[in-house]
Length: 233
Length: 405
Ligand SMILES: Nc1ncnc2c1ncn2[C@@H]1O[C@H](COP(=O)(O)OP(=O)(O)O)[C@@H](O)[C@H]1O
Ligand SMILES: [Mg+2]
Figure 1 (cartoon, rainbow over the protein chains, first blue to last red):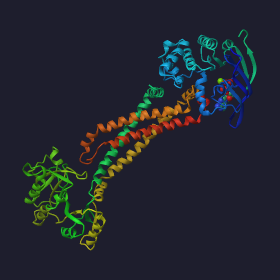
Figure 2 (tube, rainbow over the protein chains, first blue to last red; figure 1 turned 30 degrees about the vertical axis):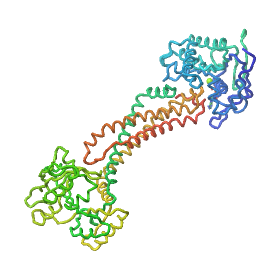
Figure 3 (tube, rainbow over the protein chains, first blue to last red; figure 1 turned 60 degrees about the vertical axis):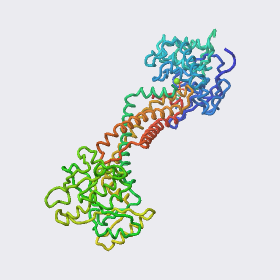
Figure 4 (spheres, chains in turn cyan, yellow; figure 1 turned 135 degrees about the vertical axis):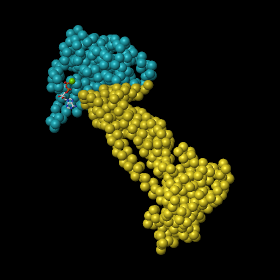
């Protein structure tokens, strides 16, 4: 892990208006994540965790403040360029896997590769490799409905890393899984961070998941209330 | 296969029932569209094939009131009139009332010349064919007052199978014979129509046969001409000639109304024209409701795809991707349905021609119609895809991701 700041949030405020009432989800939030860090984000439901991930991934823009990822000001980028930027830099992993049910595991992993300039055979090699990393080469032609939850999430991770992005954004990736499947996922994430140098930002309610990260942030009502780095990390 | 095509195909296959029903609906709609337009076009072709240099003079009172024979010299004397012939509806049948084909009493000396460009004599007496046939038929027509010529359809259709030389008895519906029997006609020639408007199951016979029979008391009725068909000289003189003729007879005994053959033909079309109108109204309503059911099916498909749109956006696809996917799917489903409907229309063309042959003689699924059918289905598919895909663009990616669809 280098000391170079990779993700930076400066005074980020995010509000939603609901039925005329204003809801401040993030209140002047500051956050720095160095390149190669593995950060777990905990906090009560509705505290704004997903909102932070969406801002970092360029799926959403703040009402004020700056969000920069790898020296790019995400919030200032023209909306039309955000998808392409996302494809190159960010890999998403969701609690409910979010695979496309009509596509096979391999086709799901191929999806983000369609946006790269790679040739068809190069894409296939990348997708094969990503599936190998998560240990599912033998399930490539299965549909999501033919896979267990843990396997689905591994396919989703393969899809997130297929284009070799710098950041993995994971929103409660073990939330829908049993303990042993969850542990498999955590091992994979750990390897992605330690062996492949991916910066990981993970929201979780799972203490075991939090324990596997290098750093633990606690969020409450839109502000960071605790920031601990694991001993030995 | 390129990714969007594959994903779209998978979605189509994933909802087999819904898409199958949609395809069926479009198949029916496109078949109906082809059928109705071919019917209307067939009838219309007859009207349009009417000669530009032909007028029809009829009674101003009604088509069913006959004009007197005495009008002919006066019509001939009008400037611009080249040739005229009386033209009278006979309205009999052969053996059984269901064996109906039109018969017209015409001027034996003028009719063939007048119809020179409208019909082609393909067979005359003693098996004569080719260029000499017309003169031979004219000669035979003049030599027996019972002489008649028929369209080739009366030779080809099995239940008639009329040949040159046959004596054909026609049971009168209007002009009863004193002896209560049939009229006898002798076939002296067979022609092929050169214009769509002319049926190929029709008989033309000598008006003087009818008139002299009435005169001598052999038959009952009035001596009259019916209407007059008039060939005029070329040039833009139709209106002038028509009004000159009508002015000539302004003081009777019968006032006339002279119109172009096209107008006259369309009068007959409008007599049976309620059929296409009726079909058109029903067909339009069916098409309309099918159209909405297709759009609705697509909208349902679209609502279930908001989540996918969010996922695709998280992966770096633009929101337009989902819209294009839906348009593509709509287009594919519609084109499959359209192609099936068109195949059905083409496949049943012969059947329809056989079933309705005499009534819609020009029924044909031509290339214009095929193009129209495919264009209509494409437009339907694109519209359905757009109406399902456009609303996506109103959602933020985070909202799409949070949706249940
Ligand atoms: N698009 C939205 N419109 C309105 N309110 C929203 C929207 N997205 C999130 N919220 C609200 O913002 C708050 C924070 O949401 P979120 O970041 O998803 O919380 P967490 O992930 O910590 O549970 C919640 O109260 C949620 O209901
Ligand atoms: Mg959340």
